[in-house]
Image (cartoon, rainbow, N blue to C red; front, top):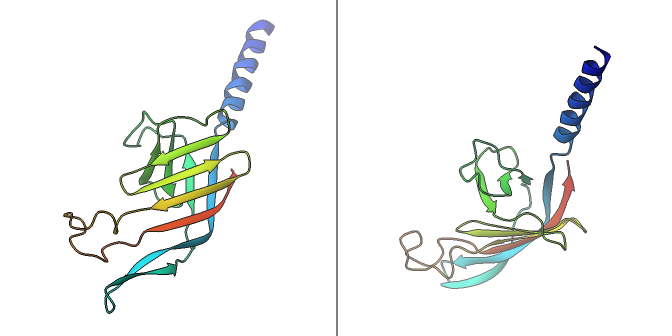
Length: 147
């Protein structure tokens, strides 16, 4: 009986420690810059953007659209997956995530990330952006904290 109880305790603690090893990262932008289209001058201009949002990098859940990804990125507070990270962290601690309109690169070693949003400039004359000014390309920098 004592052996069965010992095995039960080992299994219980090993599953608890596995659950504790699930990683997630909260990423907060520090700076954001990019371009916006000025309707009056018909020119693209440099601009800064608000950094009042956060990203959450997690392992995909069974509700995620693409469960073949090693990681997914969501805006903090949303269940909607905005980017997929096909591969796990590489040997340098880098994680590469992307979607149709954006990319995110995260370095687990120094906790820094880069986020690129590219729609609205290069894809002019598509159904999504038939004219200039339909989007605002930007680059964000910031840091992530392990949760």
